[in-house]
Length: 147
Image 1 (cartoon, rainbow, N blue to C red):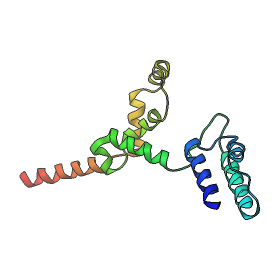
Image 2: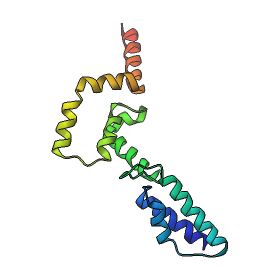
Image 3: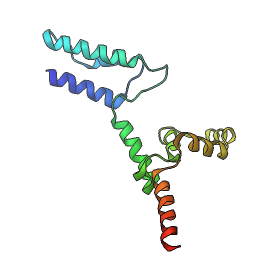
Image 4: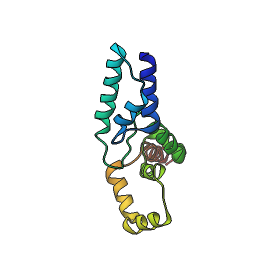
């Protein structure tokens, strides 16, 4: 019975995330139990209720790292070879990966944030990537060897 309760709770959080009211929804889904299984059920519901209370109205938080791992996998696909040496400015695309965009959203975003602002943010927050440092160093070493 413990295994079933834990498995059902994990599936619930994995598939639905954490949101206001998730504890109540989980309570409806978990079968009533008595004894130690009943205590475990109540602890699982209370945990989900407590963690879900951190969400804002209308917000759904990931309940497992699987969602985040999927996002980083998509980001690495976008970055191709760049992803082997740390984060690049492509990290800003994470918002687009997890959002639904309309033409109006895109127009508004482009009007509010200029390319120069993005480049400044990347320079300030991320800095030079390891790969670009390697290329720079290799270029300097190559110049001294051949020159």
